[in-house]
Image (cartoon, rainbow, N blue to C red; front, side):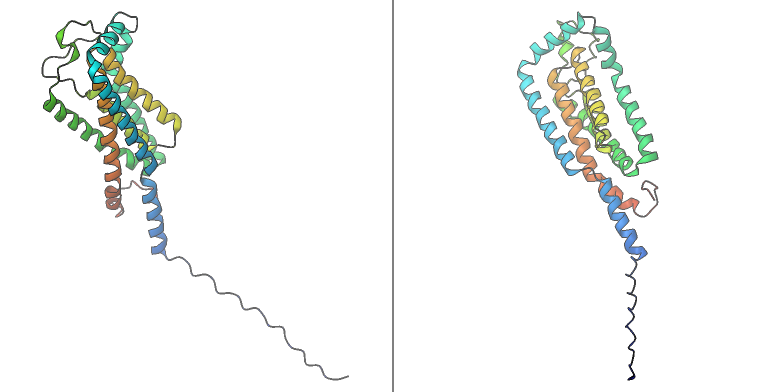
Length: 252
């Protein structure tokens, strides 16, 4: 038999492992993803601003008939069994909204640091909204609807110099609610709850007879706009400062 030369089958050379992502690149990607998650959804911001426009339009429509609307609502509540609850909510209702925000802050601190960042930036917006409201009040100096004393009201009319437009309670209620919404926009039951609380607080000020309807509607719009814009502008700035790791507001 002839000699047969056996050719060894070529052995497949193991492919070189894909280069591992450098630690610096991984950290940059993680930082970018974390920064993106810290921002509120753009669609939500636009929706909130559109809601503010609707509130402003309603306030403008309510202004020409402010006296009639005030008399109907204020006297209707003053002469009904709802006078007590309306007065209590108008006077103390903000405490409930503040308590909800406090619980939200604790929860986000434990579970969701980007949400906490949005909430804290929203808290700055709450302060700015209140200061803006006070400045507008001093510039406009609109008298309270109860100042004339010809309409029975649930609450006693504030003293002179405590102006009516816009409603500070409505501004603060909407501002805190907006901060909470921007912190946890995906929790629909939570969003519905804080929106309801803010709306009830604003309406209670009208029902108690210490504000016109356009005061409350304008206050809701002002609080909503100031906090939304503050969060949109402030979150990226604060986030860039936190990248140094000096403050532990991001998840490891």
